[in-house]
Image (tube, rainbow, N blue to C red):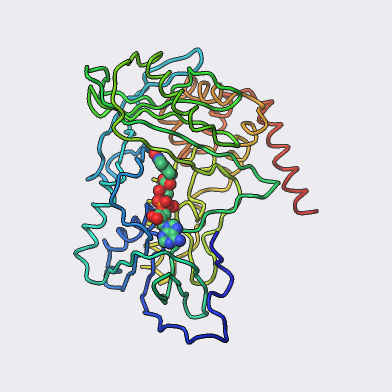
Length: 405
Ligand SMILES: Cc1cc2nc3c(=O)[nH]c(=O)nc-3n(C[C@H](O)[C@H](O)[C@H](O)COP(=O)(O)OP(=O)(O)OC[C@H]3O[C@@H](n4cnc5c(N)ncnc54)[C@H](O)[C@@H]3O)c2cc1C
């Protein structure tokens, strides 16, 4: 964890280096930092001076984003594959779901990084520093970013480098962890017209465990084993599950692993604030953009960074999120996290009932936080009330106790 609040330079010591000044410093040029820079670059704010700082050059395909979207999104040009139909497999229910008006899309990290870098390269007001950030501090009229190579001053700093602490006892903290293989088979075995959104037919081991399969063509697919739980598994277990799934469910014996992906996404209902201080704004996972109960983040990053740009254009200030992620959905997230953490009801059954009893687009709209309250009541009626009422009672009780104690 970086010592963000401790002054980086002692008051009596060597004279600090002169800080270069920028209108905006974007600390961390991953998904959120690059998205913000891209959205700024599409407006008159492209005339402001912008510095992106990241310790790595984003030159590898370090992750794949999948998400659903109705119509075209801002990064349509780099959508690698998309599907309007997906398979869902519960324990005793399987269906091919038509997601319209949504399409399930896949963006490869490397394509996204290159596309944004190319867009920014045309703007002489955008600079890059490939340096490790060691501290970010408020200094009244703006903020300073200290790296191993220098000091940068900005009117506004947008920080996606800080890892959330996630240790409040009255909140829920699960992890979504996954390992994926991009495989190539000698024979055609995949149907590239249909992806698999969730396949829960594997042993659950009192957790939520599922696979998803994103086929690129009849011989290539990303096959990903995903778990929601408190702790990571032994590395060998992910691989054993992948091998078994390929053999038992996809009936694939011969394949070559072209690429591996491993990731951990926090599933937390801890209130993560965007405004770290007057001029330091947290974005991305650091700013709480990850949907607590599903881990989906990519679309929320686009929604929030576009809202920040709109606020900067209108007021000169990056207004904190107000109603983008609405509070009643925060309660639904907490209840679902509590049900999973306390093992009140099997997550596989919850997702099965949701997709069995509701139109797929309504379920996706609900997960997107854009349903109406009557639609939410119908969705909630798909699952047995008792475990969820118990979960809500505990969520309320824990929060009251944390305020009183
Ligand atoms: C493997 C993986 C797969 C995912 N798949 C999906 C998905 O399919 N759909 C979805 O919606 N979400 C997905 N997510 C979740 C989320 O969308 C991603 O984590 C996303 O990249 C978050 O964006 P971010 O900008 O907050 O963080 P990042 O993209 O991780 O960017 C943070 C940047 O900060 C830099 N940095 C960190 N510390 C420092 C430092 N001290 N100095 C300088 N630079 C620093 C890092 O190098 C990095 O480039 C996935 C996450 C992972 C890890």
